[in-house]
Image (cartoon, rainbow, N blue to C red):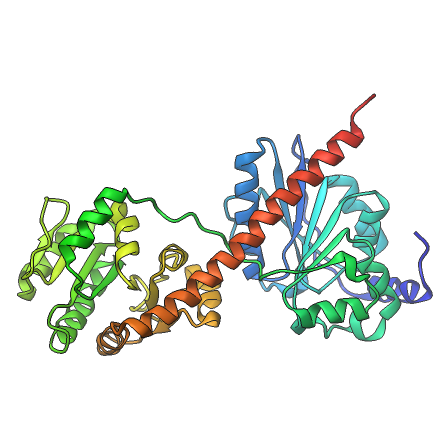
Length: 411
């Protein structure tokens, strides 16, 4: 591909940028290799999820993640679905050729508007199918976009398809020189989720037993938070006399502590695992572990995510309850699933509480059906929007791999 004068200048500047210390790369694995580039931690998590789902449907596929080294203080924690995280240094021709020569990727998914023109151009020259995904307007402010318009146009032209997050982003990409026919407006890329199942008969019976009472769920509650959760429920009961709490322990081995705390609280509770039933006088249902969360997520319009209130906690994945129509309450300690919480918070599907008193107040306020319903709808839309994009990317990658395999097959 002929290069513009701007690209010559860009390459010269790239050579002068300090690169990260090279790491010794392991041998390329046998079989097909999907190369995904993660522009940030949120996208890294989603791409690993994509790789995991692809590997399940396409045995032998390996997913390599690259990140631009200067954008990460430390490399992300390794996750299932991606066999290797490879930091990329300066965007020079020698580094680009060395990377492609070693890894020989079959397909590339690049996320975001932070592009590396030399590497992308070299991949295009080797006829590697490439798709640009999750391009947002906010990323259209880098020096590449401002100072090297010809380089940007050439680089965008290397991608078979460009998927943007909004009509505004589509206009920016089109203004940069990409034909409208190669631009698709999609939702944002995020982790997809497969909600836990629940037998229809059990759901119908439990809904009948609850008899239209307001319900909230405290899921994955560690022993350190049990007191705060039960106190919050007790406070909420003063205003909502029929309110029912369903609580699950964070770990099965903590269920005895949960049971003891319930016995000392004076609250009337049913032990679900022991066959307890939901009668009118029952104020709490104790579910021993998370095996029935598929049932409770479907029943409770409001879910508190345990392990997020006390310092040192990290929270649990909120996408499962959100996918099943439950509004989310959480504490501030959600670092283990920060990407998922950020996504739901941006959509208006979560509320953060910092104390047991705030938890009680939020439970009372959000027990009003219209309040929780608005949050639940926002969460469901955020989850399903990303799921549709992920499903579409899985189909697209499979198709590109099939075509590449056919083109490399002998006569």
